[in-house]
Image (cartoon, rainbow, N blue to C red; front, side, top):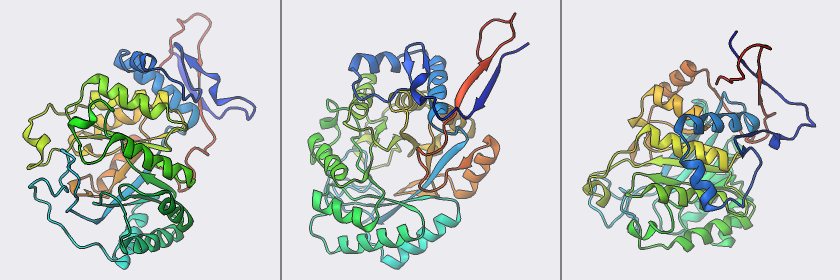
Length: 368
């Protein structure tokens, strides 16, 4: 007789951190050493994914995937020199600076996204920092109105002060995205107009205001495996883990320095290794399969959900690059048996644990 894997909700008294597999526990820790992270990252891939999938089931319903929509409310003309970005004014790409979107236009798009199944609406702007722009008043209005629709609201506006973070919180902002992109060591090879500490300071301002932190990175920007380990170590040793960690694969855009560098493309195995490691290190965090999904087949995306991803960006455009359309993702969810996570329920779902049962005579082998 084959082994059976039974998913069941645990008794309320059972601690979610009680399961341990080969020394990898579901306990939430912020004291990981670099060597521990490297050891996890370098495990044989299928073993790594099995452990990550098990940890995932302790804290989340494995069928639920959060659907987010990301809208660029101000496109192009950014003064930063990020070598991967199509919106930098330093590079000659197909992107031309556009006027900031009006409030009504943004609200119409948010309503459309909600109707298509999105529960989180993220607004991005190609600014180095918010500064004292009058546009910030419009952003606050957008946040209030989208929050009033019953959607979680996220913004990515560049650097913000503690005072601006408080204003966003009061307007109803649920999360603020500010990625670290890569390791501290590799960072200067990619960006020179904003320091790593600038990014960490913005994250600190967001956290002080009581806003959830969304912070991740990009694979395929010339980094080595040690840089991927370094990024994951930094995220996992923050005072509090990010509420969500976007894992992006570089979408190469002609005219950017990294496109000209002819770098090796990120594979599904690369993504799976990063996602699975993030899931083990930050068990209660939403791990978002973000930019670059268009380069992965449906089967590969299913593999990445198995590895621990439980959030995606949907809609046919992700800022300035292509992304699967709502209809395609709906079909993917149907094929994989996935369901959308409801708004404001992240990390509040009754957790699941894996219980492996065996006959008295069969080998003690668990199946996924």
